[in-house]
Amino acid sequence: MNDAQRYARFCRALAGESLPAGIVDLDAVDTNLARLVQPIRAAGKALRIATKSIRCPDLIDYIAKRSGAIGLMTYSAAETAMLAARGHRDLLLAYPTLQASDLDAIATANRTATAAIVIDCFEHLDPLAAAAARAATSVPVVIDVDMSYRPLDRGPHLGVRRSPLRSAAEVVALAELIKPPLRFHGLLGYEAQIAGLGDATPSSTATNVVKRAIKHRSAPYVRELRRACVDGLRARELPPTIVNGGGTGSVAWSAGDSALTEITVGSGFLASSLFDHYRDLTLVPAAGFALQIVRRPAPDIVTCLGGGFIASGAPGPDRLPMPWLPAGIELLAAEGAGEVQTPLRTTTSLALGDPVFFRHAKAGELAEHLCEYLLVRGSAIESRAKTYRGMGHCFLG
Image (cartoon, rainbow, N blue to C red):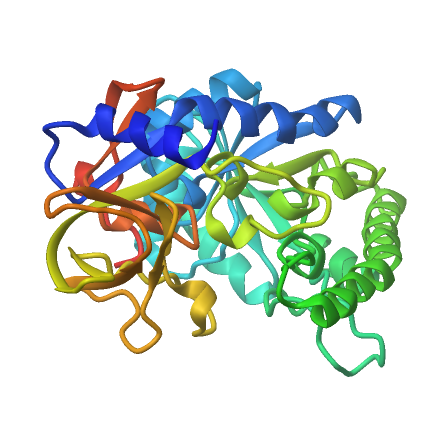
């Protein structure tokens, strides 16, 4: 299907709908799901869904059912409790918290579910143990290991800043401090310099070479560290129940890591624009938002109402929403995407009132701006799915 056909299909589906509107193409989701799950299944590993990349319970349920995922990776304690109340039974909160209300929520969720939480230092343990005691539950604990690559030991740091734990000895030492009412559950290690580094940007040939070199040199280090952690824990009779890693950008590579028991995927199901340029990954754009054209300030410029959905992270052009459909539209460098209006340069014929479709740089963050997603199959809206915002939730706000 070409861009013109896709634009016509979405226009038919959204006819009469209020704009801005969020759209999820279920046909594209199904295609992405098949491509992402295949190497995981072939390697005999389990899939865990990253909810922060979706933030829409009905869509999470749809993906979980079709993919055969074993559970969810969550991003806040309140979100974890909400999903446990909705019937999910295998949850992993991938970000530590020390707030008493958060820890109480996690402890209480363990009355009906396995709701594990990540830690990376001994200071996380006592407050969590106190919450577990208050709730009269046992809380599973997962240790977060820093998978960043440091070719010169102290620097440069290639990866994200997460855990301070950088050796198997440190991981084992922390695991040995975990006592009832807590219990050691496993490991998490996110190799961001492999999973989150696009290496096939058309306009950046030289940079692509550098990024591929980082991935190539980092890969053996990541595998060796993860294996050393697992072996060290087993030697101390602390075998991990789960060993979690990977991400959308490293599914094929992670599937070959023998130490991993499960791989996390989130953004890839919706294929946000940050995942457009990976050498070993081909996905179909599956989510976006539609704005209406309300002005024509010049013959080759139209202006849309709204659109300033900027992604988190280091500021740059890649954090802006990407004009998607119809073809032949682009943001103005001097204005970008504005909260109230977004001007576009166009080489195609568009009328006032026509919709223009954009893609967000990060899959989950779009849901923070919209109360529902229109789930489209073919040229029709199959259903409407409330986002967390539409349900009245703002988990990190």
